[in-house]
Amino acid sequence: MDTKMYRNTWAEVDLEAISYNIRQMRNRLPGHCAVMAVVKADAYGHGAVEVAEKALASGAKMLAVALLEEAFTLREANITVPILVFGQVQPEDVPTAADHDITLTCFQKEWVRDVNRLSLPLPVKVHMNWDTGMGRVGLRTEEELKAITKEIHSSSSIRLTGVYTHFSTADDAGFDYFEMQHNRFKEFLDMFKSIRHEPTAVHIGNSAASIRFPERMYDYIRFGIAMYGLYPSDVLKEEYDIDLEPAFSLHSRLVHVKKMDAGESVSYGATYTTEYEEFIGTIPIGYADGWIRKLQGMDVLIEGERMPIVGRITMDQTMIKLDKEYPAGTKVTLIGKQGDNEIETDEIAEKLDTINYEIPCMISNRVPRLYTTN
Ligand SMILES: *Cc1c(COP(=O)(O)O)cnc(C)c1O
Image (cartoon, rainbow, N blue to C red; front, side, top):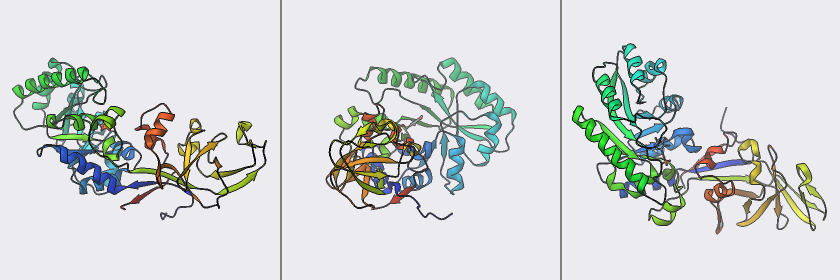
């Protein structure tokens, strides 16, 4: 299939913004520390291959994803840099990962033993994950650390190339828990260095930790949400002087505009009834595109002005209360700038009682992504 767009709804991904955000971050980092671009979940809904290529062209040295499938997608696009998979990969899938030179995450002795039994012709690269307080995956005690390091040492199927941890509160107002994790990490690292002498990459920071403590970062930062131009939390948005440019915007067009009399109703359940004579417009986006029903009442931008979504959002279509008559074909912006006005991803997240991370991820792949470079 070609890339012709048959529908009047699309997301725009500004690749120059991705580049700008990486430069903003690199300017803060010490020279020895490189950017690992986190492009899991189809680059947080922005498109993994396009974002990965732009990130690498902007100075990122490594990529990270959550799933093995996501790593294969990047290799199929002829991307050859190191790719780290954060999630657990089943031992039986390790040979395929090794064939594609994918770096895996390990933290269980049993996993190391199972991979060892595979007697791989070329060892699989792994980074070891230390759970210093996230409580998700990773080894938790110094006994486990010693045992697994020994097991890896004697393995010809595994090559340890990195160690890492992940902070659970790096975007919070308080620092106590963060410092506890950081101290725990330093204890682990001392112990590790006393038993292992080969050079091993170290990385600890997500966007929030690396914006706050660039000087504490080691060989890489794992740069996710801020690369997309979104702040990890309100605390970071308000208190830290890094300028980020959002890469994602969402647009549609009026496909139908009608004048309704006072007292007529709109959409399922007839939950909205016109008070006066009103112009009501229809846009072809709905909950199957990820524009979920809870967004009823949210504003959109038309010719730079805010206008509300009225009536229930349907699977494929949504109605807007217009301030006057507009011709069919008029552009409607659901996320992003129009004129002097802007609807930020953060505003949508607030309306949905969630975090900005969720918003581009939830716009389904039924919505085509168009790439702009300004
Ligand atoms: C998703 C993820 C990141 C990226 O975090 P951001 O807050 O988006 O920067 C980093 N490290 C790990 C282990 C992750 O799972």
